[in-house]
Image 1: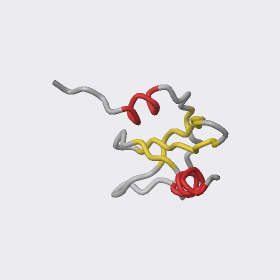
Image 2 (image 1 turned 90 degrees about the vertical axis):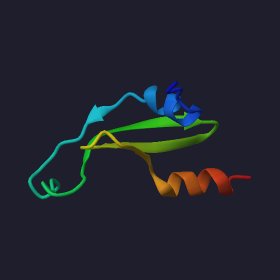
Image 3 (image 1 turned 180 degrees about the horizontal axis):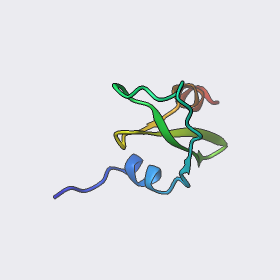
Length: 70
């Protein structure tokens, strides 16, 4: 069974939008962002990115801010 963990469900709900790609941003031999969006947990907005290999990431600064919020 391939059940999704909660963070995957949150990322599924992100309204992904395409990123304007230029030749400087595309590395044919590496990873680059193709889509971006945001998700909200409490008062924190997380910037999210989807790469050309479909991996989805959450901005590290936003995660740090979330865990340091009082």
